Amino acid sequence: MNMCCGTHVRNLSDLQMIKLLHTEPTKGLLRLFFLAGKRVLDFTHKALDNEKGLTKILSCGPDEHVTMVDKLQKSLKAANKVNRSQLRELALLEAYKIKSGDKKEPYVCIHRDDADMEYMNTIANELKDQDILLFITCGAAKGSGQFLLAGPETAVAQLGSKVAELLEGKGGGKKGRFQGKANKLSGRSAVVKLLQEYSAGS
Image (cartoon, rainbow, N blue to C red; front, side):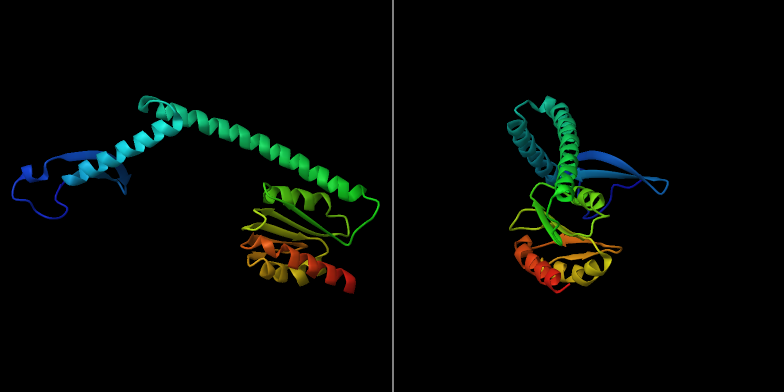
């Protein structure tokens, strides 16, 4: 209804140009986004810089950017699906190795850089009927990541918050599971020592 949205000009020509960008419906009305004056030129320069960057990265002309990005997204989605499937198979194999081992340890520690929470929970689910305390982490070994402590409810309840503290992270859980984010996975050695002491005193 009204283009006035700020400083008044002496003449419309002072704006140099107006660029209508897009509209957005809101509360039964239509919000119009636009640029005026030097902001149009700034927007154009930024758009051209982005276009040059994408052309270099994608190795194709501007007209093919959308098609190429769509193709890359589909490839990434397919690769992620395969990766999740492989991680699940690795988790099942890891659980099988623990269950079939001759010597039953009171606790087991597992770390994998490229794993995720689904990987950790898969192992814990496969071993939920075993009297084993599991400490599983994923992420950069000396950086941040995720952790899971699973096993006997009493042990997890006593150790969960201590594990999170040693990893400088936060977490929570119940019924034999305590999981969360770790800001310092380099603290894993301290957690292993904690589990050793707990197992020795049990």
